[in-house]
Amino acid sequence: MADNLSFYERPSDSRSIAIVGVPIEIGSDERGLAKAPRAILDAGLEKVVTSLGNDVVSTEMIPCPKPTRAVTSGKAKYLEEIAEISRATCATVERSVKHGEMVVALGGDHAMAIGTISGAACALQAEGRSLGVIYIDAHPDCNTHETSITGNIHGHVTAALMGHGHSLLTGIGGTQRKVAPENFLYIGLKDFDPLEIDYLRREKAKVVTMLDITERGLSRAILAIDALRHKVDTIWVSMDMDSIDEADAPGVGLEMPGGLTRREVLGLAQYIGKTCKLTGFDLVEILPAKDKERKTVQLALELAARFLGGEYGWYQSQYMQNYRDTNVFDVESARVEK
Image (tube, rainbow, N blue to C red; front, side, top):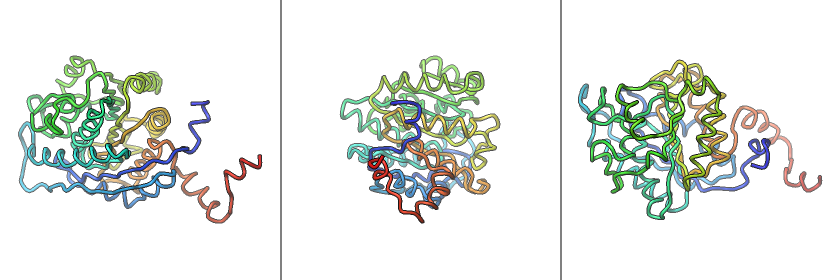
């Protein structure tokens, strides 16, 4: 960064973007999450991506089965089906990353991240490069089939990626450990299952809790992001929308009182998008049926723009666009004339 104003400049480079939708909801007890990828696309995701100077090279939707049987208990519900979805997702993301494309992945529930992050990790491991993960969530999702209370696999994601849990999940992509614990950064955690705290301590993963953010704002998170980005070659961000306070993100499966504020989460996304080299990111756990005035989907679009290094808020997308549509103004020529 040249100075603090650099955060507000448009991205100077154009990237090839692969959009991958994973309409999965069987990793959760909530029904309706499968509609989120289409809702985000219909709200204008491609326009957001291209408005920042990027090219959308592909938009692919991973086939996901709907719940066909009643599952109310068990330590790993829909295990075989989720493993199959994860393998397909992994292959799609791995191919895109190998082609040099940045991946924007749309869920569905957070179980999809087993496939997306595995795909990125496998592509990078083949090149001898390391992957870091910034996991923005109210929940650490580090249960396994041996520790889970609910049996919902969207709560097994990070343990599986670090090589712990059922072999059908840890074996996605062919290697057991996709991300080293020291290359995991959790931000926004506030709700833990009893054994998850033990797991995080044992694995020595870096955690920035909501209490940390309440106490010191984003300073600890920014320091942790800086430490991670200097340690790894590239980063994947997994953004769970239920980490955001229910006032700003009402359309999620698990509404979160006391979560990240709109300003905090947009600030995080902006800092990450401007300072980190990203391979891709997830946007997960949006429940369109509960999304009043599409508030959560619109925030997801703003977050996508921030992760891509730009902005797409009201000022850029509506107010100034009206002037661009009615006035001919060449920004580059104006700079030359100055």
